[in-house]
Length: 114
Length: 116
Image 1 (cartoon, rainbow over the protein chains, first blue to last red):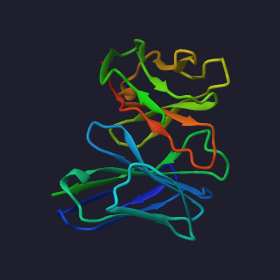
Image 2: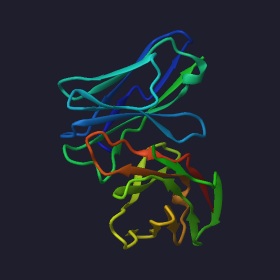
Image 3: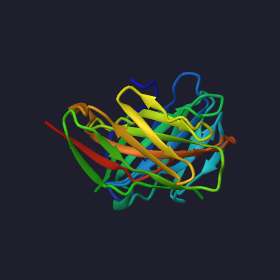
């Protein structure tokens, strides 16, 4: 157990629907990062939050949004889902200082859009 | 923007042998960090090894070592005495010196199969 908790582990939904993925960072970590891993692709950075504030934005679609709550958990909202949104979505966290030792990753949420 | 390239989509190695996975990156930064992550079939991302760009000495963690060539922007991973449990996707990743918004940039990965 890495200490980063992602729920649900699996999600199957239809095109056009909206889903919410949840992430609880490791205890004490203030930064949360969301990544998308499509089939046979590397991890694509979506967005970073630090202590409730958005810090960096990557290739995140306008249909996607995220937030980090006062208790530091984060949610990634995906709307108007398309078949191409099917992927593994990872959350990672890092501590208050510089994340120069890398991130701690959760086990991911497998999203299947049918 | 930084990019990370892993030119070997798939590799295989016999158990107990040595294998080297390649990674190159492109950056104009002078100070940065490099990482290798392992993703086994369980899909968990596991940090294997890290390298600080300002250190000339290559990092080593047990059977895993790197060959860091800063001028060539190359960061290869050597796995010695390969074990069946090393079968996984391996991702090379880059992070520039921390500035408050420093996401890890990943390559597309190399799928390694260790054969008995």
